[in-house]
Amino acid sequence: MAEMTLEDVQALGEKTLADNGCNAENAAAVARTMTAAERDGAHSHGLFRLPAYVKGLREGGSNGDADPTVEQIAPSVLRVHGQEGFAPLALERAKGPLVKLAKEQGVAMCGLTRIRHFAALWPEVEMLAEQGLVGMAMTAAVPYVAPAGGREALFGTNPMAFAWPRPDGGVLAFDQAGSVLARGEVMIAARDGHKVPEGTGLDKHGNPTTDPAEILDGGVQLAFGGYKGSSISLMIELMAGAMIGEVFSFEAKETAVPGCPFNGGEFLLAIDPSKSAGGAFLEHGEKLLGKIEDMEGARLPGARRHANRAKGGPVEVSDKVLAAIAAL
Image 1 (tube, rainbow, N blue to C red):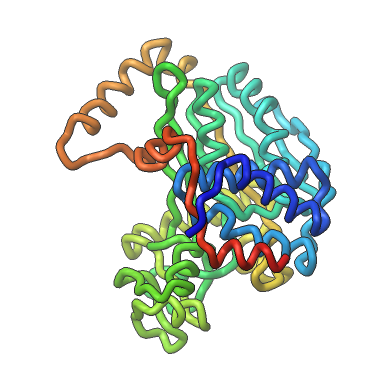
Image 2: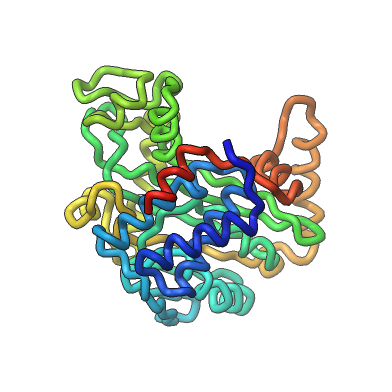
């Protein structure tokens, strides 16, 4: 492991992306997302993703000069056209209009289309909660996960995220895959020679396995919680696909280049609780969150990330990741 400051992580991300076809604005936005992941200890979404971003620029049709546009198509509905660029810049441009609309209407949704989403979802819902809103986000992928009872990949890992505002600008946020493990976690386990938990996936013959290499080599991942997680993955496919006029995971595969960020969409929902519950919603919410915080052995979702964030760096980055980046 190598120790890096957050400033060095940001600079490495920007330079590598710029050297491979990203304009300055897109490179900085993507690097901010990766730096935030490293800061919070979410290494599977940090610099680990940089080689795939570069592959997308070189081989996968990702547009490093994308200039995302935001369009209001109904009183409480926005659409962002990402122009086949990476999601971070599209999300940054959507933030202001989405927050404004949610505070005016009480609820607002945004469909991000033609984007290459390859990051965690918590940054976008946290940015909504920091503005006093409740945020929800969902996105699909390419087929990695078999539906309950099946042995063929149909769903993406289909993450969803939720954030709730807390007093003094704090947030509660969770971001979790619809699969037992996120794809990046399976890939890191394979890289480092670790087993994965039982129930993570099947090998190419349809047999349960804890070997991540067998899952990645023609096998499939499984949804968490059996049929319950499979139902949630189905919902996310519909919300991040048909709901916003975008592709399902199996459709995204038709144009995807292996190892590259894929083209698809993201569903974002912003709600202003002060419109539905009045100004006391924060204090009321704290009663529940405080019960969890005070319970021995329990912790709030995202607590570990926020504890890492409070340290402010430096962070440790895998030598293998840095060697792969150096080759770019």
